[in-house]
Image (tube, rainbow, N blue to C red; front, side, top):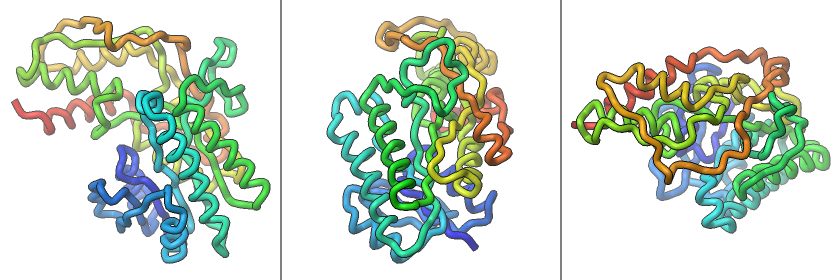
Length: 315
């Protein structure tokens, strides 16, 4: 049985990836978290790990010797990256280099999947849609810059040290259990709060005209599992639906599933300058390498996210 290690499994994606690797791929799964984090994954054996300490990584890898490593650990908030760029650089760049150096020092060659972001592309020109992996990178925030740096370093390590590194640029992924600082989860939470009488029947929104590429997290982790097995070392793959949807359409679909009526109001605090009206991934490279196809519809994801909040919130 193949062994898989998820580094940084305490976030939104980690438990879904553990389930896919265990149930979908039949792997023996290990996962890491920070000492202060809580992580209860019945499908994985959990270890504490600080990626800023390379010796901890070396020790864990020496003991486990996983066949596959999924590097999810990151400071992934754009807002936090502006407030604390040093921390973001430490975790996303130095932490990744610590992990790569730990792997390089071992006497075996695991396949490693490094998770980046569609944010790396930054300001995309209209003629560049859908976005291919070889598109020019114009990161517009500190988080995006650190992920672009991670990607470039991994490519250098692949070529210089003959390592089995595969890179991903993941676009918006959504689903039950996601934090409400992300737009789909936030809208669903507001709707359920209105249903339960926890707030006035008014849903507060930001810019509704932007178009973004949304994929269910369960489809995303299935792509990760396929890529770590079938992707080519040194290559980068977009992971997304390949179809951009206007935020207004998302909101309308959520409201159509609400159990009560409500008004929509724009909250000026939620408005941000929108330089890129549409972001849409070209996923041809992913599909060619793995045969991956999206299975879960946007409507199903929204319904299940609403149902998640209906179980979480009490009137």
